[in-house]
Structures are given as structure tokens and as C-alpha cells.
Length: 111
Image 1: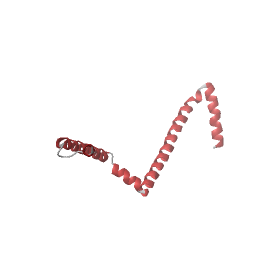
Image 2 (image 1 turned 45 degrees about the vertical axis):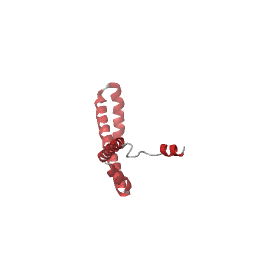
Image 3 (image 1 turned 180 degrees about the horizontal axis):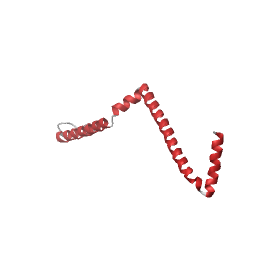
Image 4 (image 1 turned 90 degrees about the horizontal axis):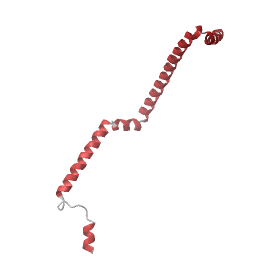
């Protein structure tokens, strides 16, 4: 019984399964190569450097915040300008035009 237990707990031995082991090693090497290629493509090293260096992270986040704020401001300016232009086209419409004319007079008086 002692001999049977020692045989069942043994790992693969090269002498017993040389072809299977070589095939398994080749398969694992191919998977490791694929993983290495995908990590290189995803620029994982650059991502790690960015997150481990606080100075880079602060500069990146500052620039992103400035860009977002500037883009939001310019976008709002353009949309409100277009909206004002479209509304000014309706000043000649009977019901809406009178109401918009009063709003325009109010704005001109307070500016």
C-alpha cells in the first residue's frame, strides 16, 4: 500500500511522458508569447510608469482638466451664440416676436 501511494502522488516524470511534456511546454511558451505581445501592444509599461510617478499623474490630470474646462466653455459659447441667432430670426413672428422683443429690450436696458 505504501508503494501505491508514492506512485499516485508523483508528478510527471520526463522518462514516462517526454512527448506530452514537450508539447505542453511548447503550448505554454506560445501562450506566454501571446501574453507578452498583448502587454506590449497595450503599452502596459507606460501605464505603470504613469501611475507610479505622482508628478506625471498630476501634470496629466491638470492638463486634462484645463482641456475639459476650455472645451466646455467654448462649446457653451458656440451653442448659446447659435441659439441667440435662431431666436433673433423669430422677432418678426406675431406672438413670439412680441415676447422676444420685450426680453431684448430688458436685456438692452440692463446692459
